[in-house]
Image (cartoon, rainbow, N blue to C red):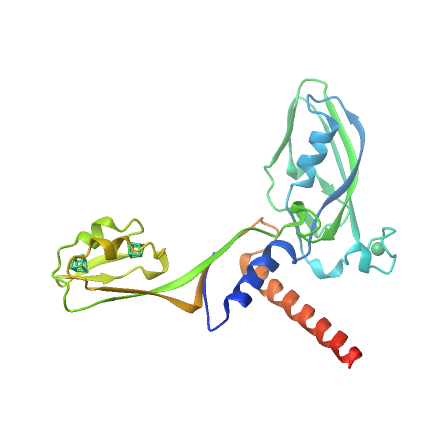
Length: 252
Ligand code: SF4
Ligand code: SF4
Ligand SMILES: [Zn+2]
């Protein structure tokens, strides 16, 4: 998803970016017991692949992070979801073969390949998923791609003679010719590279970055829609700010 965030400081924008990657809790497979693995892959490779399968939960909020759970991390239905995977070849084992005991939890995508099983080869696994954050391990990273840049402001003055050189040089196709003059028609794409300015002999282009507006590009791992991811990242920042506020009040 691409969106514009305006009227905030660079620190806040960066806070959203960082929270999307490392502070929004999601479910991921945490631990497995392999009862049978006669596939060509080592146990560790199977384990890694399962850990990286993004999981969706109908209601993520019913689960606690283990360290915040009433079981104090011992493991209970409030902080872990058990699963079973049992398959025999020939054929590909896919993410959809991971069967969770909670019907509200499932892999975000059905067809993530785990391993190809040959004739008679078997894979039998039990395990559980827990809810943690990207800061603990990248498999709990809800936002896989999170970046932003300042929004550009481009003004073309009357000095423009319509030569079109800026349009030709622009690698992002930001500029177009309208009524014989250059015009910024695709401003969100501008990377502020200034190539157009170098090309304009008439010095008709005024380019600035808007310091409190940010063009975000965020990709979710599939665990939740990007809209929810951004909302949850803002909530995490708010919770931390409130924690800090409480701690400061205790000091005074
Ligand atoms: S390079 Fe300058 S003069 Fe030529 S079209 Fe672009 S803005 Fe106008
Ligand atoms: S600064 Fe770069 S990306 Fe932006 S309009 Fe000019 S050439 Fe295109
Ligand atoms: Zn628990």
